[in-house]
Length: 191
Image 1 (cartoon, one colour):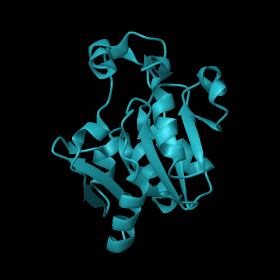
Image 2 (tube, helix red, strand yellow; image 1 turned 90 degrees about the vertical axis):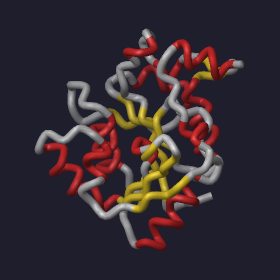
Image 3 (cartoon, one colour; image 1 turned 60 degrees about the vertical axis):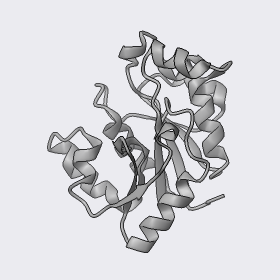
Image 4 (cartoon, one colour; image 1 turned 180 degrees about the horizontal axis):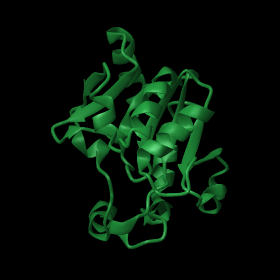
């Protein structure tokens, strides 16, 4: 259990491909999708937050601290990251999306070990599918750079991290980072 790392579950998306009001709340094996993520992350740190976009009522049932986006318009996950980095006081923040129910049990430990070894402020998992950029571990000192990038119009996580020194951390099991974005993917994972 790592006390120096907080987890922020990114749950402020529009759920367009799921045709649902809030994708995080769809059931997978009798639990809301986000509950699978909460369960995996609570094993790794006691500090778990949910980043929302003005939909906090949906998440109060989880009894976790909620962080609302700093802007009215939907600006994507980078806005949730930026809002979280401004408000959370731990040294590191592990970001994970609300629709990745099979996250590795050692995600934080593995990413932090490599970031410490390489003296980088960001660590990103990589599978055979490529970088899993929504599952990044960020040091809070990266906030100033993120603010600059965001205010210049940047909205893609991978574009932001590629301009910084960062560690790439290989993970063998790409299924751990599977995002459930559609009804078809939900049905396939319910089997």
